[in-house]
Amino acid sequence: MQTIQDAPALRAAIRGWRGNGQTVGFVPTMGNLHAGHQSLIRLARARAERVVASVFVNPTQFGPNEDFERYPRTLVQDQAALADEDCDLLFAPEVGTIYPFGAGHSVSLHVPQITEVLEGAHRLGHFDGVATVVCKLFNLVQPDLAIFGQKDFQQLKVIERMVRDLSLPVKVLAAPILRADDGLALSSRNQYLSAAERARAPLIHDTLLKMRELLGKGHAWRALEQVGGARLVRAGFAPDYVVIRRAEDLAEPADGQRAGLIALIAARLGTTRLIDNLLID
Ligand code: PAF
Image (tube, rainbow, N blue to C red; front, side):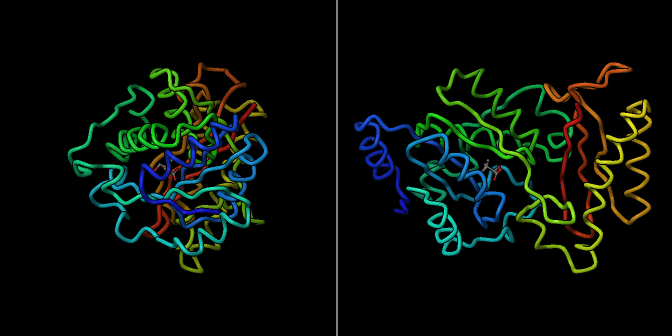
């Protein structure tokens, strides 16, 4: 696997593959790779002839009080993990390659509506940063397909919408959430949890399962949001939201709607913010 930092070398490698008629699958990441990321690489491997991953901790998607500085940077381990999955190329650019005029002076993309709720309401500007960097990475890598994890479900929807609205020639594929044996969704941020917090963290997934079960038994979705939130608060979490939404656009469901839904939770445990979701059909 080759690691490339600059745009001309990246373009040359990809031009070579394209010249041979090969398709390119792309997995954008912020590094600190875990088994969840590796499953995305495997999916790309199965769907495309060449696989590119990027590792770039994108400054524009972090708020001023978020964890940009302490976000784990583990390039050497990431290279090994990607090589293990038979990734062809790692693109690991410097900030100046992605933001030639500085991160604070970049063109910024805003995907309306879907970015204004849930994560977008709690992390102002977050999805502008995500859409901007993903669009820049798509322009650099020019993949046929790109893989995004369903754990960041709203991010996936934002990217799908951006791709459609900007007519980008990229097929967006969703990969299922990978979980630890106790149900906790894999995330680079799990390592911030203390041992006691790690033991409590699976309650988020458990609460999503409970909400799905009760919805199936005929409970109203609005009531379940209260039930789920109260359960987490009792266990010492500080939820940002515990909601049931339409999976297609994250809008509130109609009363009595039972299919095409998703339960989503974002909650703080100590200083760590965790998110998770569960599709309900
Ligand atoms: O999901 C992530 O890791 C990031 O938001 C992404 C898509 C790599 C953009 O920086």
